Length: 220
Length: 358
Ligand SMILES: Nc1ncnc2c1ncn2[C@@H]1O[C@H](COP(=O)(O)OP(=O)(O)OP(=O)(O)O)[C@@H](O)[C@H]1O
Ligand SMILES: [Mg+2]
Image 1 (cartoon, rainbow over the protein chains, first blue to last red):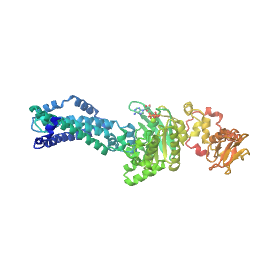
Image 2 (cartoon, rainbow over the protein chains, first blue to last red):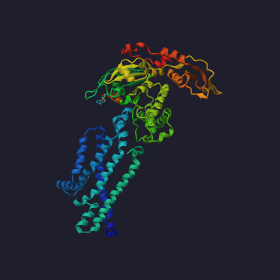
Image 3 (cartoon, rainbow over the protein chains, first blue to last red):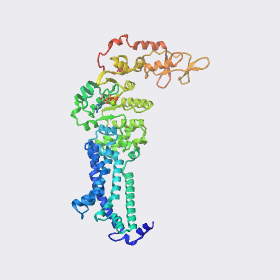
Image 4 (cartoon, rainbow over the protein chains, first blue to last red):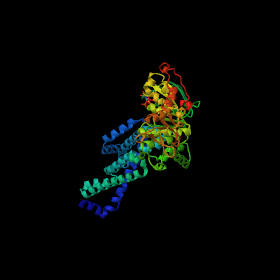
């Protein structure tokens, strides 16, 4: 408890380019960038593969890779390949981390839509694209959002690796704290990251309320 | 009119689901495809709206080959009802019903107004319009499925076992309602079921299919009952064909006698029972204008003295049918002794015996 008071009670921690607000913003920037890039790649891909049934191996490979690839290892690899100085060493591993949950859940969501429902949609005279966007996507939305949420939380929790390559973010408190044995900073940084993850969770819960039809929310 | 001309469907795995099927489903009538599981009913039905494309042969919709029409366009002009209703879970009932009008680009207000109209037509409370499908019972969902199929007023309706997932009581009322709707709308309906009783109840024409998609017999229900083409059809029709066939003979022809003295009626000439020593005995009634001979016979069997009471539409006694009177009509409609000999002539009578005889 003392450590937390030391960290959050210290006025110097709240201002300047290494203060809490700046670090939070940096952290959110990396996270948001990685998450958005991943979402733009993975969600349409998941919809497409789920709808056409073609390319399902991509989903399997991606799901397995997610389990096998160590984010930190990937970070080191990217640094070795392209060096430090840009945000790429952070972005690439984070995107790689963020893609599988979105891809897998979007795919599963679309695949999992009741065959009778899909059939009825075609039977009513919807075209392929209309079936995807007017029927499959709204029905799969709870799972799609689940994938996005898991992905966002992982990214936010993992974005601290930026500190390893000299970039900012909440990871700085942890890395620097460890280096200088200032454990209040380590703990404080970890708590902030946990709070951000909670905020993301909360955000998605609210989003779920707004965008998912009550007719679908109940069923799942 | 829907015409199958030598239609064959061979699935990629080699299964021949439908083999050289030729038949006609007349305009404005209900044609039922009935047969055991796997005989190709669904496949045949779905070739009409091109959910499945035939391997060879042609299907004509009023002389136009369905293959010449782009499938989504074709389907928007054909109502389609499936067993599990297949309602869109994320849409309110009213918007589910308005699906095809929306697709056809109707103005939203007009489409919804039409949807409300249809909900009423299929006997659903307008308060259900704002609900989601999961908030409806299975029977209600089926009604919505029917309403949705009718929304853009298509001339043709395809129904694939639409009532088989609901309990028998709900099924019976849905069947009644379909007949009632049809008496007003006169759609060209192709109805698939594996339930021969449903086929006989609903069909103007019944096509009995055997496994492999072969047409075993196509006839009106009464003809089917009295003259099954072969052993397969006879077996499929099941027991009590003679009695069931009487459902298609109107009771109108029964000779009515005047009510005997021991029939007790109230001030308004509605029957109360048969007088006996201790009190009143049970009775059975039928309406000669509306009921079948089967109902008349049933009424006779319900009375201890074997006399059926004839009533008018308001329940007033108009006479009685004695067992002798019923017997005369029964004799006239009994199936000839040569039934066995008239097997499998393959002829396809398309006239509706119910209408022909009434
Ligand atoms: N996509 C398919 N691929 C291969 N065979 C199929 C396919 N769909 C149906 N069949 C086969 O074609 C035959 C006819 O199937 P169909 O679904 O038309 O039967 P059905 O009469 O509707 O049966 P049920 O009463 O059980 O619904 C069956 O032997 C079935 O196994
Ligand atoms: Mg079937």
